[in-house]
Image (tube, rainbow, N blue to C red; front, top):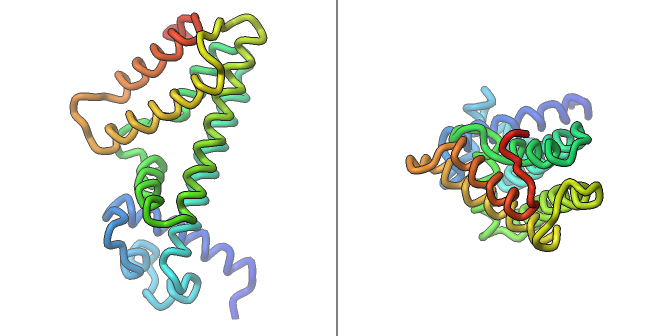
Length: 202
């Protein structure tokens, strides 16, 4: 019988393999066999650790949410200057390219949330945490006099996250009318208008 530490390691490996399988094949029609191939294991071995494929997908979604959020939080916290903090927050939230692996998994999982309440809870939690990050950064800038907010911080934050999600989906879908650089420019332009501060040079 595998030791608990070994079991935890194998579960982590399977979560990573599921992410690779989704990036390669997409979530629709994903099979245990697809995850097994990515992990270099038999389908039976995958089912031993995750008898229900959706349990594995839930773990993948939760892992992706945590990694994405904490990467953003650390990026923001690393900057004391309010302007640079807001720009870092933007940069940490946008896909670096249409093939950004973490963003691709999150977009696939968020679509799945429409059919699964447990995944909807994770999507909602990520939204709330991201809005909180933006709200804190905006309030910090307001309180230090760096920003003159035109709207409540929570409203600007919610719009910023919604724009990120919408633009990010277009990037992930390879919309050739948009580029990562253009999306960044548009989002920073929105935040500049709402904060009264030029963010382009930060």
